[in-house]
Length: 314
Image 1 (cartoon, rainbow, N blue to C red):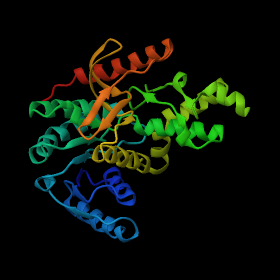
Image 2: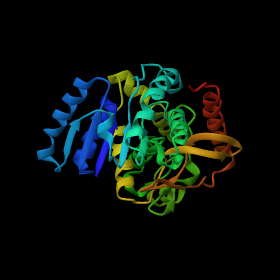
Image 3: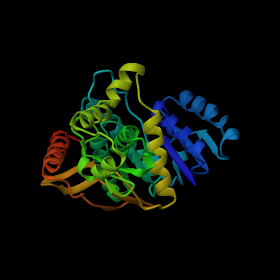
Image 4: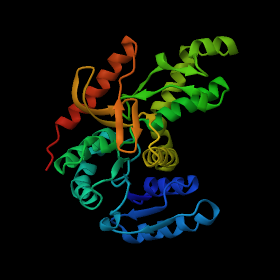
């Protein structure tokens, strides 16, 4: 199967590397405004193929996206140290006004996976352009809090001393400062978090929860301050989403896609648990949060909606 990646920077090229290592797809096309960069990344990535899985990877232009089953959109400017995701909006929205129509003109049947920050708003922008071309908005998926959810599970699993694959919990809302760690929903090996901690004699008090919350919520800022960008985690998350679509896995992922209403906030894109399959988002369902978490999620959605509705899209 053919996969397109628009934006061959750190995130796009790392997503391609993750796809190669996991053997996802059969052909990958890298598209970037900086054509020499795309060609160099494609060559370097292709040299990893003999150590991983057989597939083709090459640089191309938008017309080469024809036939792509999935296209990852990772174009845009980088987040600067100390800059919030929302401050990226004006610069990246202008870029999307140019490239989103080109993607759908050449790959009208593709599921589009948006990675560019602020991903909630950029996914909403992308869905608006998609709908203008008759593309169902369910085929526009933002990476959302897929990575934040992984960070939450990884840090909690370390504290609990158990494989992260047996820790289930979600980060919802904005992929950013207002995101909500849903502690009330966490389960481990089928047990409520409190019961698991009791049986394993693990102390998880409010101070420990606060520490995990801060490390999840501030992860991007810390990594960007130390090395300038984040890409391994998000690259792996994008590969997971693409694999889910290509194989129609019907996985529940905390991606973001436009919803009509969430806790009274209308026409907004934030992350919720969604069933993802071959045609994109197949079903959406707000989980049964406690009262405090509902208020936090509503506030997060209101923040994203307020910023988006202040835009004037050409």
